[in-house]
Every structure is written in C-alpha cells, then in structure tokens.
Image (cartoon, rainbow, N blue to C red):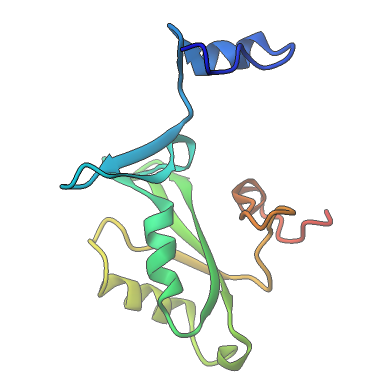
Length: 151
C-alpha cells in the first residue's frame, strides 16, 4: 500500500527482492495463536532446515537460556550434506559455572526438553557473544567464526 517504502536507495535488486506487487516482504516468520494473536518467531534467513524440519533458532535459544549455567546463547545452522543443516549453539557460560559444565551436558539437557530434530548437535563455548551496538546477536559473525566485534 501507499504507506510502505518505495525501495532501497540505488539498490534496485534489493528492492525487487522485498517489494512485489505492492507488498513488502519483511522476511519475518510469524504464527497466529488460537486467539488470533500474531507473534514473530524468526527471520526466514535464520530458519534452520534439519532433515526437512523447520527449526526457529529463537525457540532453541530460549530453551538454552533456561539452563542455570548459561549466560547467553545463539543458534545457527551449519551445512551438512546428510541432514541439510545441523544446529550449532554458541554458549557463554556464567563465571561460577566455568569448568563445571561440558558441551555434552548442554546437549543432553536440551535432548530432555525439545523434539529430537530441535536439539543442537554441536555446542561451542565462547567467551562473549558478538553483538551490535543495540545488543542484537551478530549471527553473521558466528557463522564466520568471529567472536570479537572489534575484528
């Protein structure tokens, strides 16, 4: 409609990718609950496909954050020719739990809480989560193996 942007400045390809037939495609994925309320679950580009199943990283991150030893967590998809993408969790451990919890313990803990296709197959402890100036996790840096935003 008339309230959306006309496009990205001097970027016709990006404009064509997100505005089609007058509709703005944001790349957000949402679901309506039984009362009709819409909640945003993830971005399409962040959606992980594991053995044909769609996994929203934000859902898995929320479960990880319930673990008493975890201070911060982010999940990405790692290409795997056998399954599509494997779930990999990057985890920052609270100081008082450092050296007291293992990656496998986190995986086993998650297995008890989510469906078999949703638990991370890989967990990597990192010292700090790369975030933007407004506090959003920089998933791109995690995919590139960069954990220091000063790089």
